[in-house]
Image (cartoon, rainbow, N blue to C red; front, side, top):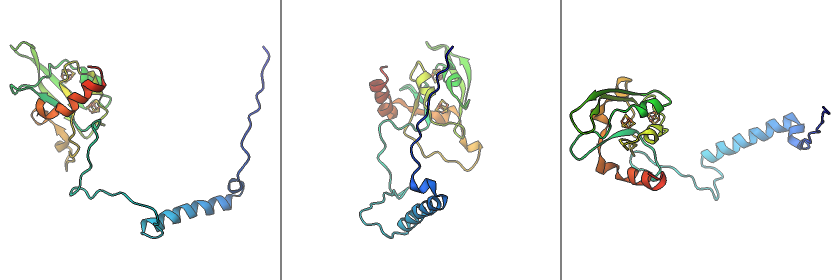
Amino acid sequence: MAVQVVKVRRPAQSFSSANPWLAILSGLWVSTRHFLHNLGLFMRGRQDFAIHFPEQRLVQPPALRGMPVLVQMEDGKERCVACGLCEWACPTTCITIYPAETTDEVERYPKIFDIDMARCMFCGLCEEACPEEAIVMSRQIEIASYSRAGSLWHKQDLLVPVAQLKTRTDYLRRNYDR
Ligand code: SF4
Ligand code: SF4
């Protein structure tokens, strides 16, 4: 078999890359320029953007994925049927479910449903995997905790009335063809 040799054309070296001292000086100039800008000097025509949290808040976009929560139906019960699909889909294995049986029509419910928010990365895969629309990404993002135990959310903490999640469920139905 004939071997084909390809000649790679490389771009000509720029003046600064040919001279390492010039490259260092130009890097230092970029750092100095940002430093002076951050001190408030030479800011002509530049407008910085800052939100003074918590007194000020950003308007959240509809696609925002906050912490995952469990949908609580009008009768106070969870919509979850403990199928375990979200637990299986979660890439950080931060969901723990212990199913139990119920005499209700759905037959199963999660006796224990925990999410370790310290490990959750808000990817939304649990929400996508759920066939019941029982776990959704809420708009809650202020969930910092001072302890590791505080970042373990149990079922009772995770339940949110379905009416409060309407923005997200409407968004999902509009964009994910549900
Ligand atoms: S958002 Fe992602 S990481 Fe968090 S619980 Fe759901 S699947 Fe797991
Ligand atoms: S996928 Fe939905 S129904 Fe199944 S266990 Fe998770 S939250 Fe419950």
